[in-house]
Image (tube, rainbow, N blue to C red; front, side, top):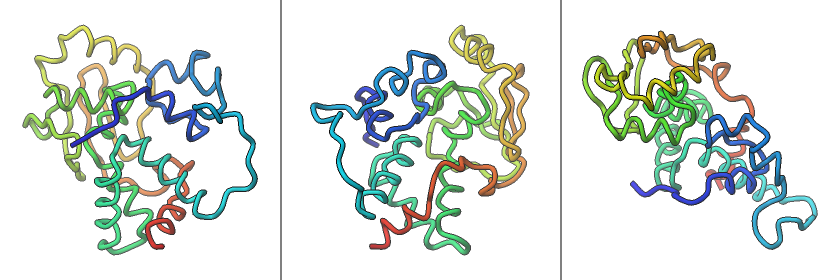
Length: 209
């Protein structure tokens, strides 16, 4: 699956908000949004008029897509899947995204950012229910046990991550023992568990045109 490999701080500046793609850097004064809040490019300082409804929907879609590190094709496929499920499409969509293994690894504080979580999964450092899984898009479900492989726990990089993330909380639908590198999915995530900065109804409207 293709993925964006350019400067990620540029994405935050384009969306005008922190997408937390650089781990610890996003919480410091070095964050690009703090230093250069304007949009990237020659015309980043332009002050245009009010955006159209379509433009607002597009920006919200791009913000969510870039937050989870997905390409358009995969993002749209998840939306189509959410439409087929019973319930509210927007909430179903967020639930699918939150249940990706790379996102769960990030939420459990086994990584400092979603891009780092994706890399950790791809490199085979994660097990689900005792089996090694290296697919970032793997969908976890209630009761699943997610842990860092025993061999990987001794790596300096992994130790550094766990030490830096010590004391950080996890969503209520998850539980974790960071010292042992073990976590569990207690239940499916609900809308209240998720990032309230997303306006998923705008994305539903965008794809429903």
